[in-house]
Amino acid sequence: MSLSWGSVAAVLGLAVPVAAALWEFVLAGRKRLGYRVQLDTTIRDSAASGPDTTVLQRMQWDGTNLRDPSVVLLRIENAGWSPVVAGDYVAPASDPVGIRIAFPGRRVVGMTVTERSPQVPPTFFVPGAGGFETTGREIKLPKVILNRRAHYKVLAVLDREEAFTETEFPEPEVTAGIVGGVRGGNIKKTAYYPFASRQVRWLLASLILVSATQSAFTLAGGDEGVAAPLDCAAGTLYLSGSTAFAPVLREAARQYERTCPNARIPLTATSFKGSVDGLDTLAAAGAGAHLPDARGLGNRLSFSDGPKSDGRPRLLPRPVALSLFTLVVHADAGVEDLSLEQVRDIYAGTVTNWSQVKGNDVPIHLVSRNPGSGTRTTLERQVLDGRPLPAVTTPDCAGLDRDRPGRCEVGGTGTLLDTVSSTPGALGHSEVGAAAARDDLRQIRIDGYPATLEGADEGAYPYWQTEIAYTYGEPPADSIAAGFLRYLAAEVGKDVIRSKGHRPCAELDKPLLCRPSGAPTAR
Image (tube, rainbow, N blue to C red; front, side, top):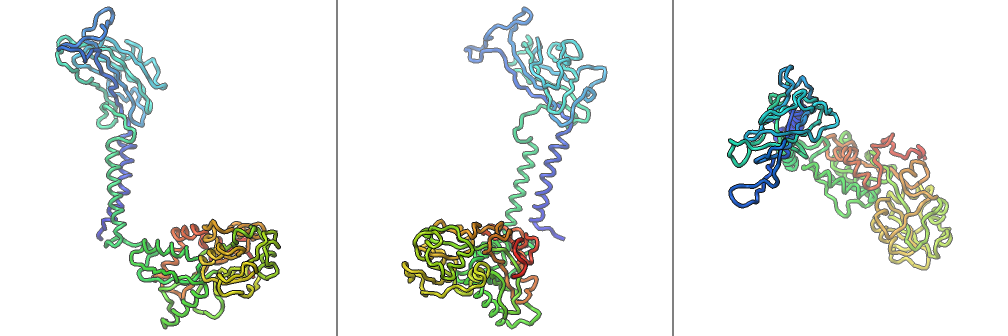
């Protein structure tokens, strides 16, 4: 079996961070004794002219002048994650000295401990007791017990040996060992890494390179051996139906095409003309395909706000989302809340001016969707208790008499919202997502409840509907229609549905019913 470059990159992408963690926290992080030379300087005036430098201020030690003094500050530290105890030092048990520090070319004239961690007791550093002493050019330090991250600092005063003529002094030579420590246990000169050690930084750089390689293969998409996601299918899918659900479908189609390189979902301005129109289009396409009874159409889907009417036995429903709708008014109506009875009276024609419901003195103009709209059908069934809308007074909304009430019809949600916005006193209906994006309109609360999923769940808000996807027969499992339906029920599809103000059926307790929890099970 051959592995693709994408698979190799994925394996490396997992192996590299694991190796980095093992190195940092298991291998390099076990017992480790380290030191840092934090200061090593002479007390000379390096700016003085001439071949000889001068001492800035003559130093003395025990009454004797120092000819060329210098000071060294060393930090001894536990650089691992395991404690260092007396028995860990590589030295005979009878020898109290754990660390020796030599200064070639210089002799030690004095030393002191200037800083120590709180866990390091001062009893370790009593001169002449327990290995804390100086001899000639060497400092001896005891077997200090160091917990994780513990340290202490030693300041040494030195003077040049007469026989040493070099200008610069060699670095201090630190000798110590830890049983079971890193790289043989020898003490190492450490450095401060604000991010990570050099080895780990190399490993992280390798990880970035591997991730970039894997991303390149993923973005290539069509390379052999790079498998498409499980829900991807090849072919062309035609969508139709609900204008209210069109924003979801346009976004989901765009993302599906981007994810699935062999899928095409062409959409035009006339793809979504209404629920009934979409069902008619799907039924006609299925009948024209002359499919056998056992096979469904695999390249078409239609979406409807609510269930189909009788008479289309081969159209099969699949609930997709719970959709919310809202009534919208022109800002000059002066109304933002209506009781359910007031809404029904307005559409029945018994309330014709906004002043009758404590609004402004403006005639009410009803702007409605054409017959076949799922939003309109839901308004009639859910809000108006099955009553039809009043008769159209003008075939063109531009012909509404501003001084008298009237009603007109438009084709799509966008046109309806534009018409309500430009017509004083207008009242219309829309899906919530599209209405919420308009600052020039007011949404109507019903009985004090806004259009929210919580209100629908409690049975308080009535204007909602189940968005249903219809197929012509049962589409083949490997068809693009079946793949797109699975995509809408998966995480990415659910995110798209939620982003447009709808609730995915797949996340409800009873996804096949796809109704608010407080809604009655039958009407």
